[in-house]
Image (cartoon, rainbow, N blue to C red; front, top):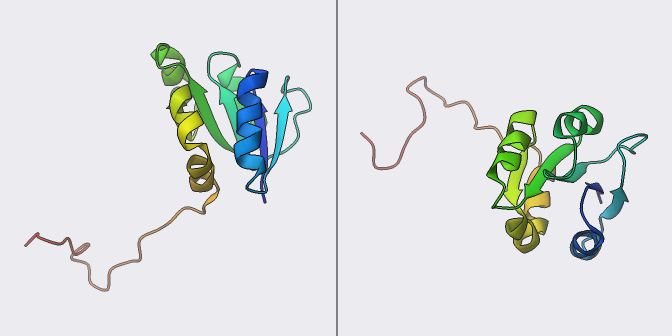
Length: 126
């Protein structure tokens, strides 16, 4: 399946991530430093433990998921501003990780061009 890098997570959290994603066929690797980081499909970073701007620069074109404590909203805002694709509280990461990774791995969807130029047909709208 996909190669998933985990950067900045403590060993207990990494073990949970590895168990959830490894059981779905993903190769999960923990990196302690971005120096020589292998390429990946998705990178998961602790917004409170890593240099977010450097992570974006080094880990792209991987899809990027940052997590952090809900008690540290500034770290979460910095991750969003740095360019992470998804930013979540640590509790959400643990609860919904497989679905979040699936969504990041899915190709972007596009709406088909309408046959006429009146815009999309919205149910309940004139």
